[in-house]
Image 1 (cartoon, helix red, strand yellow):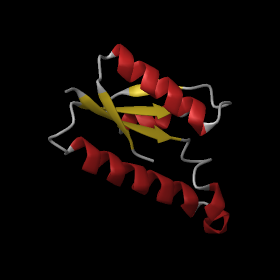
Image 2: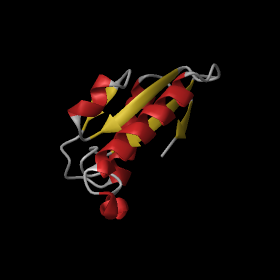
Image 3: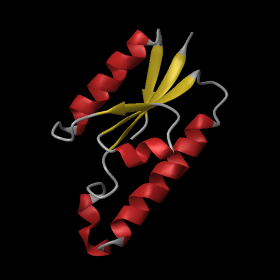
Image 4: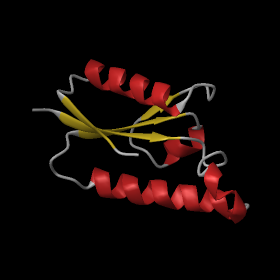
Length: 98
């Protein structure tokens, strides 16, 4: 069974908005969390691939695969687009890792 992971990621500058008290450090926290999650998921031998759905090109420098979004859709729409892309890649199962 082909199983892929889908990691939806907002722009680092807009992500983790509930952590507003962190100021500029909020971007660093969002970037570090993404890098950690991506590294752990990418190392999983049970997955056939990792797709990152995002609204930010900067995320693409870290990700293996990139699905760009216009930034005006809610995260649920980004997830839906990512899952549609995985269907096109013939994935039979998906794990959405927030």
